[in-house]
Image (tube, rainbow, N blue to C red; front, top):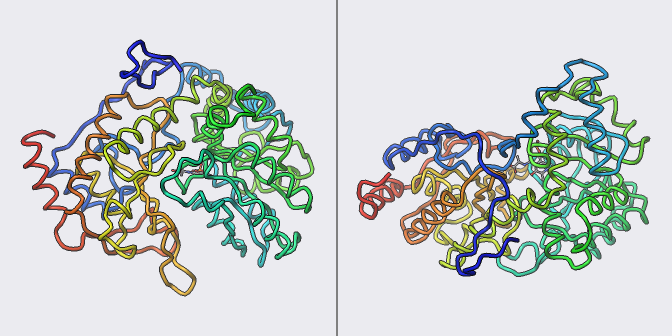
Length: 481
Ligand code: F0G
C-alpha cells in the first residue's frame, strides 16, 4: 500500500486511471420514491437510468482495462477450433496450471453442469455456505445442500480474518454420517458471498481438499470470488505473505478436483469455465457443453468476450488490480462503522454489507427488513443495493418461510468503477438513513414467484413510511437532489 505523508489523510489509492466514462443521473427524491414503488420495492426491477450508484452486484459490471478491450479486436470468430479459445487455454494454464477447461456462458451454467453430472436424487452437496443459483441447481437435481461454515462465519461483528472457513470436524462427521457415496461433492466457496464476501483461509481450503481426498469425495472450488479471497490470504494469512498470487492459485488447483468460476467476477469480464488437472472428470462433463452451452471452443460465450476473460485472468494475478475492491470496501465499512452503522465485520470482498436486523430491529423477518433497507437507501440516495436476507431464501417445500440467518443489504463494489468521492457520497447517504432508521417500516408481498423470488417478486410498503422518509429528506437536505 502507498503510504501518505499525512497519515490521517490515508485513503486507498487507485493504481489505474479512468479513460472511458459513462454519464450518471441523480433523480430528485420524489422521483426516486415513485421509481422504487413502480419497481415493487425490488431493486432488481429498477431501471439503470434511474440509478446514481449501481451497487447491486459486482457481476459483469467491472470496468475493463485497455488491454482487455484491445484484445477483443483480435478475436477469432469461428464456431470450432478458434484461436481465441487456444489463447484462453494458455491463460487458464498460466493462472491455475491446469490443462483441461470447459467454457460455459456464466457461473450458474457451470453449476448446472456440475449438478447434472454429479448430483443424483437423495444425495447431498456440502458447502461452507450456499449461493442462490448453486442451491437451486442442486435441489433441481434432487439433492440437498448442507452448510458447514464455521460458526464464527455467522457472527455479524467479529475480527476473525477468515469467516468463510469450513468447520472441519463437522465436515468429517457429516461425510461419515451420510456415507461418502451419498456426497455428490464438497464445494468450497471462496469469498463466501451470502455471509458478506468473507474469505476462506488457504489452510482451511487445503484441509477440506485433504479430507475429501481421504474419504474419496469430490472437491470443487467455486473460484468466482477467488481474486478477493487471494488478496485476503496475502494480507491476513502469514503463510501466504511471501507467496505470489500465482503460487496460491496453482496450489489450490493442485489440491482440489475441480474449479469453476463466473468470469463476470474473476476476470473482470463475462462468461465462465470449469477447469481441472483431471481429464477424466472433465470428460465426464463434456457432453453437457454442446448440449446446454455451445461447442467446446466457445461454450455459449461470444469470442470477443473470451478474449476479454483471457486478459482479465492475467490481471487477476496482479495485486495492484485485485487490491482495489477490498480496499475500497474496507474504506466504506470503516466510514460506516466509525459512525455506528451496523455493518458486517471485518470488511470482506464483493461489497459492504449492512446488518439490517440491527438497523431496523422493529421490522420482523416476515416484513423483510433487508429489502426495506434497500428501498430506503434508494430513496435516500439513488443507490441500488441487493437484498441478501429472507427474500433471497426459498420457502420450505411446505410453504413456510425460511428466515435468513443474516438479514443483509449488500452494497457491491464493482471493480475499478467508482471514484472515492462516490464512495464517500454512499457513506453519507447510509449515515443519513441510519439517523432516520425509526421512520423505516416493513414490506409485504404483492406478487411472490415460486422460484428465485428475489429476482422478480414485487412488494409494497406497510403503512406510509416511504412518503415520511421523503418528507424528512426534504427537511434535512432542502432542494438538494
Ligand atoms: N458463485 C458465486 C460465489 C457467485 O457470487 C455467483 C454470482 C455465482 C456463483 C454465479 O455466477 O452470476 O455468473 O451465473 N453472483 C452474482 C452476485 C450474481 O451478484 O453475487 P453467475
